[in-house]
Image 1: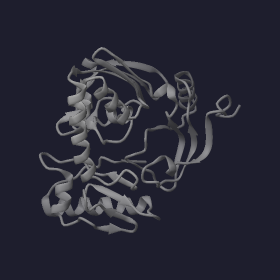
Image 2: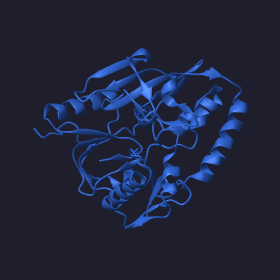
Image 3: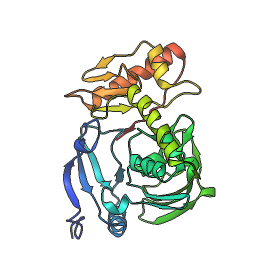
Length: 292
């Protein structure tokens, strides 16, 4: 029996990963799967776990750098509708891990639920946002979570309640393979007022960041009370380029991948920035971008 026997309809071999990322950089996945149901996902993860092969989960690929040599084992992509549902009941929202953060924000604002409007303009999925505890202007997604259903690397489903989860700056205790769904609770406010607030925040954020059609990634975590953008600018690195990867003028914490850019270009520029900031300001920057 082949490793993927019974899963031929959802598993592809040697699948190019670059098209699934905003940077459009990366080699192939040895196996790539887009399960259509939770049952398929669980069975597939168990199959690979039993055979001792690594399994990774790819979200929206908006802040992910993949090495050119590719990825061994299985890469999962939860793009099916079953993983992207968003349901509202009173002051709570239950969202699938594959749901787009932008849809989650729009739903909350439309329903008059305050908080998510602060995350407008941030790309990614609910699962990715929870894993990294996505935040903006002092608001983080983890502060609204009541429970989360996750899938561990053995293929077991586990539900975490609020008291069993912890969230801090750009990280969370949700370290399992996949976050399948989460329930959030909010306070109510006028949908009209929230819409106006969201629109203002969107205008400011759009003006400060690269356009969505540009191949760019947010690279470093902020440090202490200072932003990574300001630290990079103070180091005189705005516009610095290595190969076909360049530091954005608009926001230096975004690196832009031009045509022909490679993962090696990107990593060399990351190392250059870390070294320069460390040497000049004695601060060790930590990466926010995922690197496979």
